[in-house]
Length: 401
Image (cartoon, rainbow, N blue to C red; front, side, top):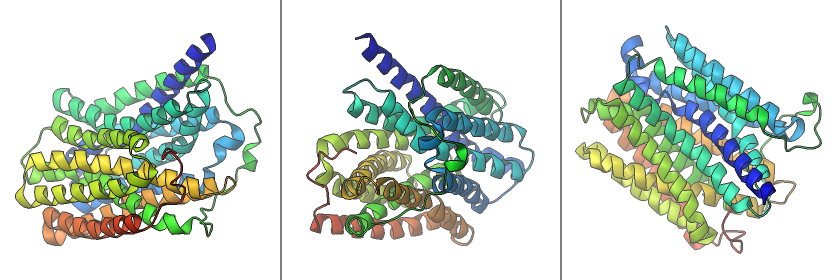
């Protein structure tokens, strides 16, 4: 009993560390408008600053995605917290646009180091028989942390002094506490190797996985693209088109999408793998339609509804996609296949967002958003139609990764 209690406590503490790190990656979201006023840059620059984060994540996943398997979980997570610290320092020091690029890149490196290592760490610290609960805790820490970032920054920016400094100072304090907690938690990798053994990972697609990977990757791409647009340009849309200048409101709308994704991922266990991917595609389709209505009629309630429905769709589609490709992969191929899916996910965060930024100049933010929605709707409709016609490999499993 004491061992189970200790395991649950360690699992919870490691999840809290995970959430703190991920919160830092979305902390600047409701602040981009203030940076835009301070430095005078365009919507395109906002999207490029945001996309630099995805480049950092993809780089780490490809070059050092398996580092924690070799050198241990704690050293990698401590490096991730170090990158998060340097990112916060960059934002605190920001007196030119270059600091924002550096801060976002370091933030992406911290997320890349945490994504795989922290997920494995939370699950490994769970007591015997608690793997399913630990899996959800890791998911909730990831998406919940991403949601807490804009919520925290928005509230502090709206109701406290020094809005471009206080959120990052608070996050630095949380990172310091997280480092102390991490140093007191045990290492879970028993046989460790020298850092020189870490090798770049090349994502791979064995023939047996390709049948499901295309549709799963399309749904994942759309879900993350929707999140990318929400977290990069929705505060600007709220301010410019809806005259909503309250940073707490814009941060809450973004946070709602992430929290809804957590709910969607939890629902996968009930819906099952066969239904979760098509249901996720349907919810993403509905979320995109609501976002189109919000852009066309300039209605805040539709923005909120699109965040909820699209977030649920993201959660269903992403966790269902992970489960599908993992079930279709052999044990010795799974890491490479999952890495490939994460590369697609973070490409979804960055590439369409830059496209929206490019189009915002000539046709306006609303027009650019509608073009984005049309493209993503076509993609998710094709993926959903394919999944309805073809049984997902591994569907005999319970639907949880």
